[in-house]
Every structure is written in structure tokens, then in C-alpha cells.
Image (cartoon, rainbow, N blue to C red; front, top):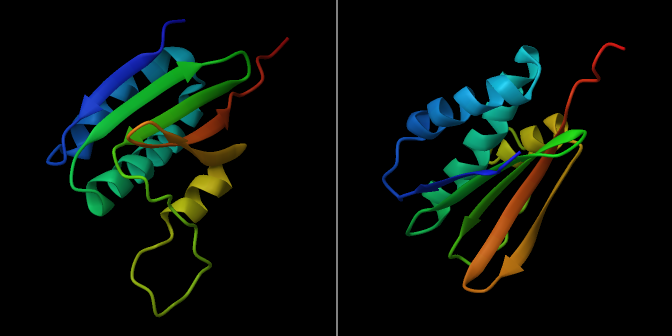
Length: 126
């Protein structure tokens, strides 16, 4: 399957990206997994919108047993997952990403970075 690439601007409403992604995910995933994947997408895109001065690109690709999500941006600063702290407002997005996904991580790229996550696909009934 061809990957879906969705560029977004700093001012992009994440709801627009979610709607575009939802249409593709509905054909790639079990319906019960779509909302989890959309939550991961929202967290990764919102990190770009909140912590960088520009937009980026969302890439979705279905592999044999997982949905691969990548969000790239022009900032070289890597995100960090913070432990729960009741005094901190926000800052729990990457903890949610870690809980939903098989794995997640970052990698530098020319002119910025990529944050990625793999959501396991439900096993098909045999």
C-alpha cells in the first residue's frame, strides 16, 4: 500500500488531519483501533504545533503487522517523555503514545527530526 503523506502548517487545525487520516485508517485497520491511532497522530502533530515555529509532515504507512506513523518537522530538538507529575499541566502526550504503540522513537534528519510510532494491527481471525 502506498503511504499517505499529509503536509501541515503551523496553523493547521489537527481535526482536519485527523479527518483525512480517519478515511485511510478505516480501510487499513480494525475499526476499534482507528481511534487509538488518531490519538497518536494528534499527540505527535500537536507537539510540532506547540513546540516549533512551523509545520511539518504526517506520514502513514501500513506494514504487515503495524501502522507506522511518522511526523517530521524542522526543529532539531528531540521530544522527551516526562514521568507523571501532578504539578505539571500537560506533558503526558508521549506517555500516551508509549502506552498505545508497540514502540516509538526519534531520529534526526537533514534540517530537523522525525518522531515515529508503530501501532500493532489486530490479528485477523483465521
